[in-house]
Length: 463
Image 1 (tube, rainbow, N blue to C red):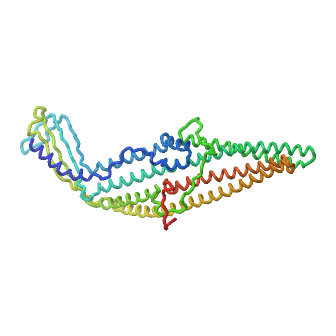
Image 2 (tube, rainbow, N blue to C red):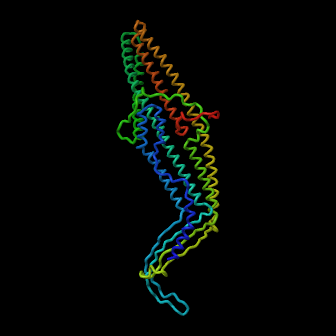
Image 3 (cartoon, rainbow, N blue to C red):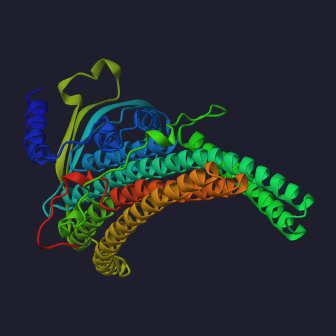
């Protein structure tokens, strides 16, 4: 029995260093991803309906659920890889009846044919001595792959919330457009009717009547297109929110407020917040580990093994001292010839590393371009909104003057209708520019990696 204890103690002392090499970084456990939504940012739009929809998006969207499952899958991949750094302990018991023929001979003595039972109950322990740190590098490589998947999940949250909000604002715009379109159609119907009366009275030509009727059909056609667009946007929101027939809740256009005071210059380090940038950094580290692993594949491996247990031919002697089974040793392994596979693998990893470096540089350029484009779009959208607002004010003044002229008999009813129609058309432009301003802030938010735009510091080195 002492021999059993000595062997077990020896194996334990040998494998303890492997257990000490456990990664300092804990395997990522189940965590709440609500912070990926960045609710504090969406609350700045001062739209409670939007905020509630985004919270629901987090709970029910299937793409976000799959993104979370991808992270969990890679957590297990890291755990599987880490298991290779630890010793393996197996039990391979066997019970069988052995039939031997008389073909064994010791000098002049020949063993006759016989049959007997054989009972084996061994515990087998093996451990690859990680002299070169290859298994540790494989675990680090798996951890970097996990980091890439985590950023992919974050990117999914940023993209889905941004795309959802853009469609949400476009739906509100379409709702308002339909409302104004109804007014425009009523005005145009009245204008067409009055123009027909003028024609009947001999005060205008038939061409004027046809022109007004033609414009009326154009307005009705625009309404049909708006209704189709409304259906498309509503169906899109239903998919985001995993709804079937329900009507997605949304605010009224009049309740929307523009964001003001957004910084117009960003520090170059803002690209470090982007998921794709962080992914490329992690990918370079991952392939760097793979290159080192490929080098260490050229070196020999050493496996410590040990076996302890029982081996007997009769049950009544199974636990006797002479039935004890134990052995231990080291198995060196080295490939003398592998057809050039290992050298090819090393070169492959080096090429992949160079490719990753190129992708990293390209990602930086793309990030700068997208942020600059986002800033440009936001600036132009704000300018257009200010100009359309000013134009709407002037048209309001023109319409008021037209009403005053009608009061004194200097303008007709149809002139007032024309003035009201022109006012509604400019109002549609102003509404479109306001929604464009909101959507441009979403695009900018997305381009900087889902960071609160107000929290981005500016410096002299801007992009």
